Length: 338
Ligand code: KG4
Ligand code: ZN
Image (tube, rainbow, N blue to C red; front, side, top):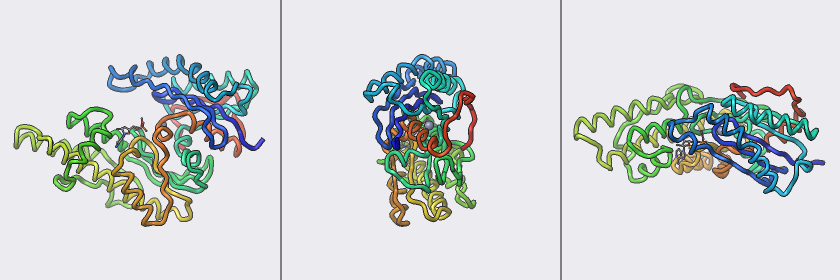
């Protein structure tokens, strides 16, 4: 049989997810998010996350199978996120996948969560190897050249905060609602990005590493100066600060993307994924860069850029074809660099 039908499981952070994927076709994708459970604590609480995953995984699997119209007997392989992530959640997923594999005799494939994100442009747009991807979310920021299902070359990454984190902190410092990305983008629309000076961290250094923690310090300084001078912040100040901050993130990511492209001759395209890829200003600037360089630009739909199990199922199929299955000694790994 040439097209594999895969059941995928994902439980490495605060989303519990299951999906059924056949080739590049997503037959079902169920995501149960835990936002409401963690809200009161101001962040993801590992114990709560682990218990919720354990409780919801079965239900998600039933939902994904039900929506696909298939039963376990129709599934060819079982793919599961085996790390990196919160160990309790990863363990729940790996144990369930092992149980299903042992009970049905179907091959088991442990997938790196980041590989799932990195291979998504193949699922959504059929990008051929090798391609370049910029993963930008609340948790990571990396430039990866993807040479094959298990071959990743990291060209650069953040040396401190992820860009989504920087957006969230900026919103917090300006009293705007979370998640910060969309709030900051909205205010920036009526702001003047040139009024305040923000640094462009690491642009003076070679390579594709980025840094965002200095932006927060710059923002804090400008905000406190305004408060000292005029006793508070006017709406226009907030808009201008948002615009200045966002322009800095955009400029840094665009310049480092230019370098990553220069280091990657022969790629089939440049993809951007992760929650921050929803940012219209960043997206437009990357699109322009790619048009200038004659490189195909791909931005998968947001639902497939954020955590989901369809990407794990797809990556599982690609990796299974290349390296075969794992056995029941598969371990859950809290840390697992690509
Ligand atoms: O990939 P994602 O959904 O999940 C995690 O990394 O956990 O990314 C979430 C991040 C948040 O920090 C959020 O503020 C940011 O993506 N984000 C944005 C925008 N929409 C979401 N950042 C900038 N502009 C946006 N429009
Ligand atoms: Zn993720």
